[in-house]
Image 1: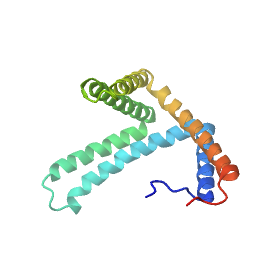
Image 2 (image 1 turned 45 degrees about the vertical axis):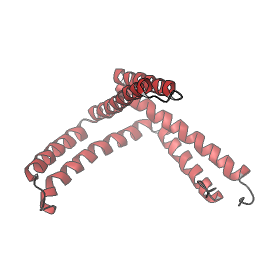
Image 3 (image 1 turned 30 degrees about the vertical axis):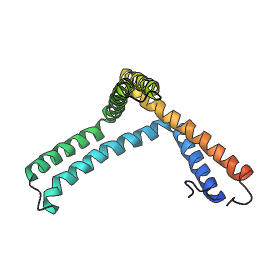
Image 4 (image 1 turned 90 degrees about the vertical axis):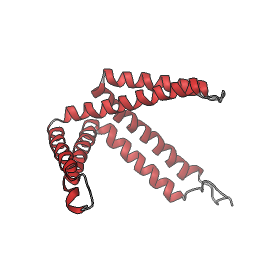
Length: 178
């Protein structure tokens, strides 16, 4: 049984073109890209709020109608506020990223010290320490970190796109092995 199958040459070239295009967009317009991400996040909260507000009207069996309406109103107000304050939305995204990294880092450190399997303990501790340091870095400079991530993803996309393009154009096997 094969776990992975070699994609077609066209599929590799399409992936290459999409990665190069995404990387170029991210590096040419990082501010606009970040703004789109920020508005998408804020609009998502607004739409979740609207959906939650109207949930009792399409789920008659729900016993928490009052809670749904209240959560919906909170989501709508928060979504409108975040759409109006994009810099705050960027900070919230960065803070969520930082908290995620710190929490998972602490859990990984804990696993490293408490897991009985001796082989991976040190790696769990290492990953945990790196995650906590990253989280603290993001907390210290949330807006700059978010913009830096746009650049990192853009560079990554360009590199992957170029490598896939070379693979598809130069090194793709003439016939697939069976």
